Image (cartoon, rainbow, N blue to C red; front, side):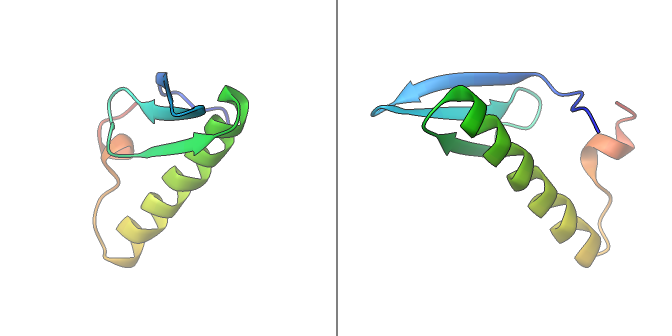
Length: 65
């Protein structure tokens, strides 16, 4: 599945930070921007799993993106 989120990057202490513009609390670091995006996708999947586990709606699915 291709992400439909806008990702921003910042370089911090030699590592790349990737985060979703609409959901900045989901973020991840990597050695390269590509690595950071891979980790970001894993982080988002973990958030989705947590929402499901707790019976909460997943914000980006409710939003209809």
